[in-house]
Length: 433
Image (cartoon, rainbow, N blue to C red):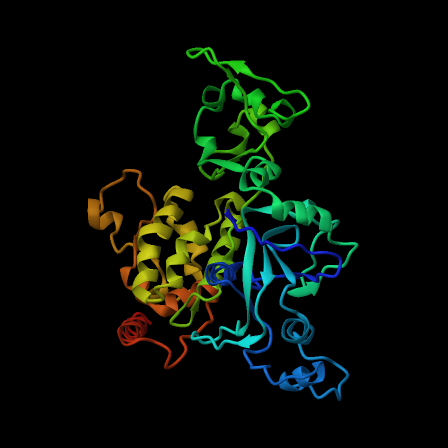
């Protein structure tokens, strides 16, 4: 927490603004820059300079609005507030989502256009600010507001929304007082693969103590005496327990019933949409994962679907070598385990039964029973043996065929080494034909 006394008294005439520093969850660096440099930055305005704007109409014109369609340019209201209506001495409350705030500052300078160095960074509208309070963790809106914020980037807080008495008390409070007002910080304990242990032995009497009503601060708080120190022990209400589990490793039914009553279960299915940008030589990794999981769900169940995490390295390294490595060392061994080395069913997941032999990942072995054991052998052996077609791992058509067996390799989109490998596979396919 940064605690800087303002030395300023404010009354009903002081304008108080709500402002967002950064429009999205991934723009926290904007907030950090503003706190560090003592400034406000607005991302609306297309990065343009509004120093010469004398009216809201001028700002609209600078933004490309001509008024003929009756629609205002995007961000017009926020830019007008920031450039023309915000004044030195106004207070600014910085939001953290819609239900919390993380800083309060006093505007100390007029509008200034500040071009950004990074391409695409449009936070070029600037004012200087003196930070009066910075809160870490953020505080609930209820500490100074009568309702939550809206999502607008910048707007005035009216008298029915802001409680000026509470705000004045907050600005005058010491760091210790603010911490006491915030209450204990939230804590999270993550237990990885919780279903792989003996739950009863791991938790013991904690099974009862973690119930919401039995925690410190609950309706029926309960404590136990530790056997060695003889000190009382209880679970506080600011502790959150998160247990992760892979249901394909061990069935959910194997969990202790007492534990199941005390946890909320949230399914975390694969998220192929996170792989939207992963395209390797024309192969949509999102489409590849989606289709394979649809077949696995049909052959087994949804608990055995492949997770998207296997393919996340392809977001940074979109090479065929990386994809081949993932398939060879992670995907195929996992499918082998799922299907108990039933290679024919593994081939169904990979759509090999509808692809030319050169494009198949799993192919019949050339070894025969008579060739291995002789014509007189009458022992019982599997009717067909299988082997990995290593050449398919670098064959674009093999992966495209998993998604759609009718797919063809796009011309001119392959890297040199991959193109040579694909041509070699095509030649082998012609020989087999």
